[in-house]
Each structure stands twice: as structure tokens, then as C-alpha cells.
Image (cartoon, rainbow, N blue to C red; front, side, top):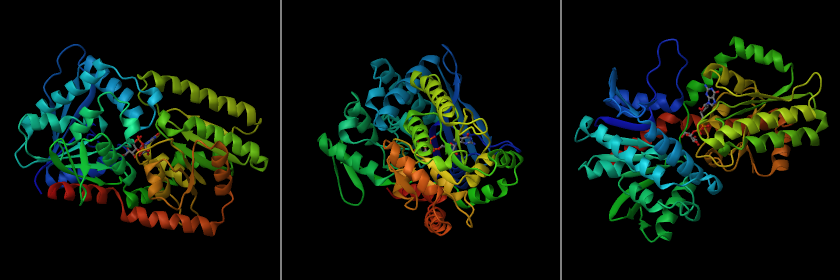
Length: 458
Ligand code: GDG
């Protein structure tokens, strides 16, 4: 295959020795780049203030060149905090009530995509295969085409694609749809997202779904497909097995003192359904008094996007809610909810998943949700826990051994928690084996390989 060029909003630099390993996506992309040789370009995460950003910061490690750019303060505000995270993110997660559309932010989004294209183009060779990631960079292919590039360009959307009626509330939906038509391959997490995309084209009269996974719109024909992202299943399972001896994990085990552990792990984000989940936990304890003092619910929630007002507000809401529930149902010797508002190391996380009798993954809407897959991979095959999973996570389409719940139905989720905690070992094993077999076959390397194969032949 030709050289691979990956562009994403943020870039994962190689780990320094002794650092915890990066997540599965970074590992898989780094492996693909290493194999074919290539470039990974993106935003450094830094602002150059009012000054124009300095030239690209280029770092080479083995076969991979990392190219990072700063953005001005205005760019960060308008492109990242503005249009990407206050318009595209809420709309793609069906939260029209939270979308704050502004022309200034929209213009900033397109301007930064043009800026990325201009910085990237001089690094490109004629036969490079280009793979662009996620909602921040939808118009990038159109900008590159405008500059005369004819390379194969693929796009993968990590978040959901909404149905037409939701998408059309965004004033610039046409420009966004047009942007996608400039790719050779557009990848979505699930069939639902792919269907929503095709449905939107037809509804607006701007395109059609053809046979063999092809679409046509704005005079271009391109491929669309489902590529469900996954994890490094075998490596993560091994990692979790070893993590049992980690000092922090042993301490955590002691501190739950024989109680059943329920675990939730999410970036602090309104799409993750954390407040509904805490309500469901409270309801579970209220409806099942026999479980009082017998369970600990550990919610690990690193802060994210704190500069966006909705996220800042949510930080306070969740902390207050956890405190209120602990006050209402806790006792002198039992703190029902442990709420951690920062990131913990990956080895400890893997060990905690394995310790937990229930993995509680209940987003209101999620492209895939890798926590659900990590929880399954981390289980002890002889005594696996139960995954309670929202039917609105992309992962629900694959993890059929989970107890599927509607996260808006608080009582339903409470019942699922009770059912998970009382499930026989035999049923737990049966459900887990089915999911683990699927995840071993469909891991992150397969996802990466499938996408790149289809892009190469598109
Ligand atoms: C987007 C889409 C899609 C979380 N807390 C800690 C920690 N994490 C890690 C988890 C997992 C990752 O972060 C979160 O991935 P998710 O998939 O659950 O969610 P998003 O961040 O919203 O990701 C999503 C994904 O892209 C990939 O396409 O699945 O639908 O929204 O790996 O383990 N890791 C550590 N400490 C923490 O406290 N070390």
C-alpha cells in the first residue's frame, strides 16, 4: 500500500518509556502508520494567542512523522469550542436543545479546515492514502480537492450520524453533506448511522444510495460503509489479568470490603447519561433494600471540555447529585456512590473493570462506546461480571450478551442492575463468552485493516 496520512483534531504522540500505554485507537493507527510509513497531522492542543501559529512542529519517530500545529485563540474558540463542540456534537447526539449555532463559529470551523489543508498539502505525495477522522474535520477533503488533490481520501465519523429531521435543524447541513461527498469512502460506526446518512441525502433530494455501498450526491460518487470501532481485545484482557496485582487495584478491593462493585467510566459529557444512571442506582437501592450496604457504585468521570458552559455546569450537577444520593441512602458505615472526577491510569482502570460485578454503561446516545468493550475484555472468564448497556450506544448492536436498557427508563435500568447482581454464574458465562468471542474476532486491528482495504479499492 502507498504511504498513509492520518489527520485528526488531536494527535497521540508515541509513549515515552515507562508511560502507561495509549488507548486502542492510537495504538492501531500508530501500527498502521508504522507499517506503511506515514504522517499523523493535527492540532497540538495549544493556542498561539493572537499571533499567527508558528510553522508545523515536525517530529519523526521511526517510520512516522508527526506534524502538529497550534491554532490562534480565536480559532480554538470558534472551530473547536464553538462549531465542533456546541453545534456538531450536540446535534449528532440528538440534543437540539443544546446546539448554539452562530455564523461566526461556523465561519471559524470552515476557516480552520482550510488552514489545515494549506498546512498539510506541502507534505503530501501524489499516491498517499489520506484518512481523516471525526466531526472536527468534515470539510477537509473539499478543501484539499479545491487545491487540486486527487488522492484517495477516507473519512471516519466516531460519533453518531442523526436522522434527517435532526440534522436539518443545523443551518449549514447542506455544506456539511456536500463536504462528505468529496471523500472516496465515508465510514460510520453502525448501520443505523449509515442509514441515517443515506436517508438524509434522499430526503433533501441531493443524492441517492446506489448498490454495492455506493452513494451519489453533488455530482460525485463515493462509498459509504459501517466500520464498528473496537479495542485491542486480547492485549486488554491480558492487561486486566495482570492488573489484579496492581497496588491501587488491591487497595480498591479492600476498600469495597466484600461488597459487589458496580462501575461506570465516562468522560464528563451530557451524552453519557450520568445523571440518569445515578437516579437508576438510587432507585435500585430503594426498590431492593436487601442490597443496602452490599454494593458500591464507583463512577470515574474525568473532566472534559470544561471551557464549554454546559460541561462546566454538568460538573457541578453530577457532584451535587452524587452527594445528595449518598446523603439520602448512605449509612454511617456505607458510602453508596464513590465519585471520582479525574482520570485514573489505564492499568488501574483495567483492574477495576475486572473487579466490578456490573459494568454500567448507559449513554443517552453514543457512536460506539469503548468502555463497554473494555469492560467485557477485562472480565475473568471463570467469574465474569454483567454488562448493563444502553440500547442507544453503537456497541449495543454487537454486544448482544449484555442486559440492554433504555437509559431514560430509570426503573428499567434499576431492574437490570438487580438482575445482573443476582444472575447465575452459568448465565453470566454464557453471555460473556458470546461477547468475548465477537470482540476477539472484531478487534481494533481488523477495524483499521477493513477501512484501509476498502479505501484503497474505492
Ligand atoms: C468517541 C465517541 C466512540 C475514560 N476515563 C478514563 C479513561 N477513559 C477511556 C476509556 C475509553 C475512552 O476513554 C472513552 O471512549 P468512549 O468510546 O467510551 O467514548 P468517547 O470519549 O466519547 O469517544 C465514542 C469513540 O470516540 C471511538 O470511536 O466509541 O462513541 O463518543 O477507552 O477507557 N482512560 C483512563 N482513565 C480514565 O479515567 N486511562
